[in-house]
Length: 462
Image (cartoon, rainbow, N blue to C red; front, side, top):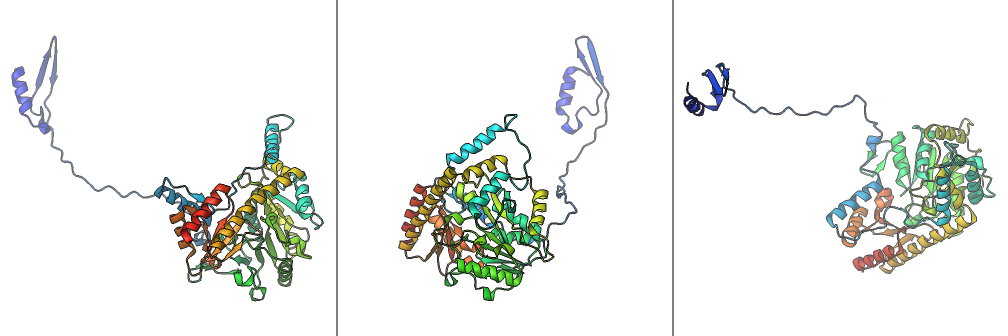
């Protein structure tokens, strides 16, 4: 076959049977290549549906107690809504007076001590590895002296930690799943959520917005935000925070005496959260151990977070007196020590150096100045809402202002304020059913931001 015939044949052949019935020979200079003819079938392509992709699943069941929790934890949910708002209004100057996070710099007398300790770790003489899980002895002694002088609390009653919130969960592990609990309503959500996770509660009851098997102690303006203990059922554990988050109220000496006696009458243990004690202006107890007999029925947890701006540094402590015993006579402190030793390697040595500096004369003075700054912020916020005709609570003994919006949903008010003023607050209902109709406004903010936020509040509600 000539080259011209080959070209003609190849062009006229269909693509599916190209060269199918020909023996082809190509002459290229001195070489000849012969291709034997083969029969080529026609392939038909048919689209088939793609098999549905399935995810691999283990055979491990989900913790049914965690599944009881409703939505997300309050503060991440507030942060999520703030982020969504910024996406909607990317140019807005959003001011956060919601999550109780400190904003002012840590005093230099404290940071210099941490820097010195950190630098020492780069030397043979100054390096240290694991420390005591319970905390370094000088810091434990300083906490006992600064906060519990003449109250019968000794340094070995004190367990240094990475914060009060973390200790609340460790205490729950000590108590186990078979105890019953009582909480203030409204209250800091970590108490309820950790109880749910531990399996201490029943299911969430949507009609009353409460978990089963929890005793909710209503704290309202009508009862001075202190529960009527005559109406409270007996529980094993009583969580109590004073000065209170979120209401800003502080229990009087008489009220705490009633609480301690109530716990004694019922054989209960009080978990007393004193994280805001240094914000107290009134002559109220700063520690539950100021009340006679409290060491037999109470332990206390606290933190440097809101005193020294340690929300990121992480340092706190829990006091478990030797006199506090379980029903079989076994010391609670020994079980807490076992949990701490098992679940925790101790607070950072750098953080503990900062904590020790906080409790020096210069450090205490610096902390009081920072606290004084935030208390001035609360006065500005309180005056703003009162001038607008709102009923306002808190602020005097705590860095939180509790504003009443009667007849309105807390989340609706939160959304209204965020949408119209670009200011983040915290809905009261996030702290429990008793917080419905209230909004918490935090005093943690730069002065310029607090003033600007109050200006926007006045424009919205004038």
